[in-house]
Length: 303
Image (tube, rainbow, N blue to C red; front, side, top):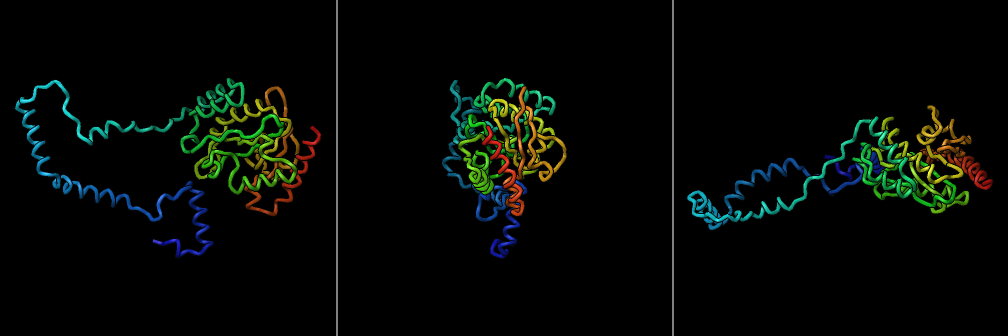
């Protein structure tokens, strides 16, 4: 077994990235535990533990059994429970994971839940109680919009990452810090705009959502936009741009162009730019994002 001390910093970083991509977010123990060996040892120790019971206890149990068999005890009261029985009775029933409904039924249920919400607060409650998407079963939190909906400015990302899912807040960690700097560069703060994601639950291992998962989430994000009534949208990343603009283009072909996004009976002007994570992976693209942010700033000043 290779220990962390045997790895170079680069190798250790690559290993941690591999675990993160596989969906491993927390290491609960400092060293690995062989649960199979632990279970085998407990089974081996069980007969010895039974033989080690006090002789008086065994004698009392034998006497009680004889009384029951001989009819000596005719009391109508139930026999006293053992400590193990009392402990088992006091344990809560196991929690079962939500079983997702068929895709078509889930999409219809999501549409109904979203359309019946009359405020962002009601929509958040509806989203948190919705169990028709498999992504919710593996996520820690349901990530909803955060900020000031009255600002008229809405920034939409693709989906929560591991940091967001752990904290229950959109855009935290390194990507959140970079986004804060990007917004500050054009005179904006996250508290003074509405920040949200297309998909409210982190997919396992940060994988892209499937088409059915995306369609199940669509009514909720479209309803968020309709209820918030933004005057302008900033879309972050390839997934978000394709979701609202359609097509199969990349963020480099979709960015920097103002397009209208349908919202109820209205349309909202939107511009796409690179996601902060894409800028962390490719810092050379920051100049492109800066051009998009300046265009976004100019449009805000015209409001």
